[in-house]
Length: 353
Ligand code: PEP
Ligand code: MN
Figure 1 (cartoon, rainbow, N blue to C red):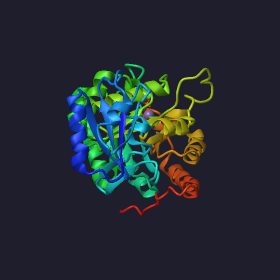
Figure 2 (figure 1 turned 120 degrees about the vertical axis):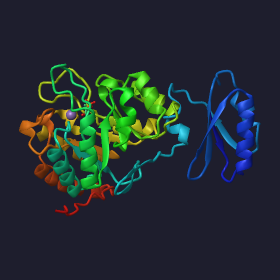
Figure 3 (figure 1 turned 180 degrees about the vertical axis):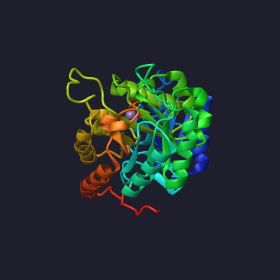
Figure 4 (figure 1 turned 30 degrees about the vertical axis):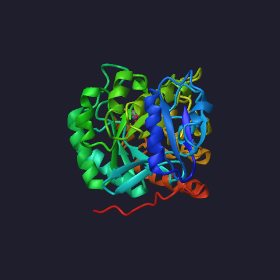
């Protein structure tokens, strides 16, 4: 249930009402919005009468029952307001949210060596990206495929961060690696294949770094939101949802079907920020620009684009990676749409020699 307090409710009254809810066996979670304070009630509210709860204080504006299986991620839980996931990076705080400029995340699929990751970081930064992506621990379908350099790649990401000032996003596959990854990463990525690894989600929810939760390739939107609910229920409210393409009946031309309809759907269901990954979504670099443009037009809050200095030689996902030169051009094209929707501040910056 959600309890909406009236505008101007004194803090002492919010605290008193919270105590009353606690005495009823419910855990009130206070969400202070721009205009109103809302209390999300966690616990068994099935037999409780909303009108009776409303009588607890004249400062209660309304008591709403959340019918959906997810609560903390639901749009109602924040009384319709979009949440802001603010990430600190060496170049300053970056906000992922509906009413903020689109955040571009770019970089190779895997961190291969220091030169390529540093060079890519500098190039994507110069083109306007705010985060560098790159896998150290890679989830590969085949056990014989390149698995990522693991821990040693984290040092290379640290070097790229230092050289570029970009924030770092990289994947966690095993909860045992969270601490060491969190030393360099500003956002922890949970990949599509681990979207329903509930023990990992619980551990990720119990730590402080913001989380990028990719949609499982066969996950429904409800399953995806329930996975995000695990992270919020664990105590971490900073989750970004990333659509990366789903399995459909036709993979003849594109690796996956990029489900851009999730943008308006998620907008109505959740307050969490949305990212679109057209690289994994299509699997082909030539389709990436059109889908990135469409995602901006449809209202995405963020984009993840794979960029590699030499896609033909990439150790993973070369066919879907843009070269840095192509990424420069694409960012110029995306700026037109980004500016049209008034959400573009990814201006190119000169690279320092
Ligand atoms: C990735 O981003 O490198 C990745 C493995 O993505 P996904 O989990 O979406 O397949
Ligand atoms: Mn990849």
